[in-house]
Amino acid sequence: MDIKSSYEAVNYPDYTFPQTNPVRLASLAAFHDVEAPDPTRARVLELGCGTGANLISFAYAMPDAGYVGIDLSAAQIARGSGIVDQLGLSNVELVTGDLMEFTSERFGYFDYIIAHGLFSWVPPEVRERILQIYSECLSPNGIGYISYNVYPGCYLRRMVWEQMKFQAAGTVDPMGKIRQGIAFIDFISDLKTNEPLYQSVLAQELKRMRERSVENVFHDEFSEYNEPLYFHEFAEKIGSVGLQFLCEAETVASTAADLEPEQQMFLHSLSDDPIMSEQYLDFAKGRRFRGTVVCRTSVDVQRTPSSDVIEQFYISSHARPDGKLVPLADATPQRFKGKSTGAFETNWPLAKAALVRLAEKWSRGLRFRELVDECADRIGEDAGKIESEEEQKLKGFLLMLFQSGFVEFSIAQPAFADLTAKPHASEFARWQAANGSDNISTMAGINIDMENPMMRAMIYLLDGTRGRDELIAELSEMIDVPAAEQAAFSEALPLLVDDNLKKFAAAGLFIA
Image (cartoon, rainbow, N blue to C red; front, side, top):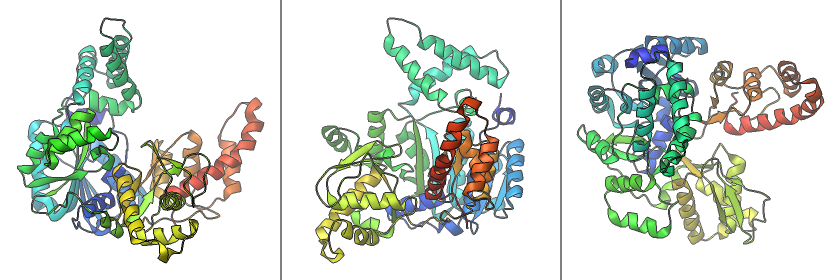
């Protein structure tokens, strides 16, 4: 089945990808002293956009920017165009087209270009054309994002892909292919052999597959093309068209902070070349996937910014105190837990106060000066008495947390409404909820996981006409529970609604 036919047969899910948000890309560029175009007024292109859901999420939140998406599948583009019409957006153009025929004469130039889930999954000549499009169409200080599969980690994935394809070679039905392929890997991983390591690897790969949607598995594991490469090979390819590696979209991907100190020192000693450093880190971590941010080679990139760079950003953090909150003003250790990046501990009063304040403020952020001033009172200090050495130490601490994925820096403050008597979820989020999305996008560029069907139903009902009591009443009617559990459900529902409203508000779901 060729690429076009596969996407006509099985729609790729309407995912949104926060790591590709132009505000995030511009912020990463600014961290490296690259002045990218204003993302709220930029022209943005997505290659292989599917239905355009990713672009549409940006277009809804940033109406003064312009967006173009192109995809080979007419069915995907037709679905996306319907979404655009339904939401009444005038700043999105979705086009059915072949990337081999894409020209700057037809589409112009762009400040941000995105290709997510495309580069590894197309024929070699299309991969070359993708890079040419970046070279031809990216504005002088423009920023690009490209994701792709990488070795050495994908050697393990390739082993599984090939076995699944072999097993399901005679099956035409896409869902049948997936069922056969997964069942076969399940069978092989359960065998008792003299090579238990092999079975263990297969079991881990099977677990990863089962955590993804069946559509995603079909388009990855059963793709006609799926060509990983080493990072240094990717860097060479982009260099040949006048582009350079800027950074990874996920900052934690390029940190060695999770390794032992002696391991970090060894890796650091291998190379002071950023490309080779990244390659050695891939070897150390067995990386299998990258989302790389690129820019033109003519742009000067600061590879090792000083901690003072954080003064230009809004600082935010999803890290939360883990367990009981200890006194902030003394040296009692406080443990903080990230959303998906583990945990850490500190006993430093200023750091504890800063992280607690950022947790209260999330998903909005604070400027560094604001943060220091607001924390001073919490630790019993006059803001003017906090020594400059302490401030520099805090900058270094926040920089370390940024590189470890616990803190984010942004050039812009997200625009969303606080919780009101009759909250109104964004219309794009309500569309996602109505269409069964497992991740709902917010105005702050965050995806909220739908932990249960009630959350999705609740978001759909949040159209600005219902207050808390009306939400509870309607959800009580909508959700079927066994008679024996009705009393407990009725007692728990108001608490669930209140908790979800707070969670939605903090994540930036609501509009004015």
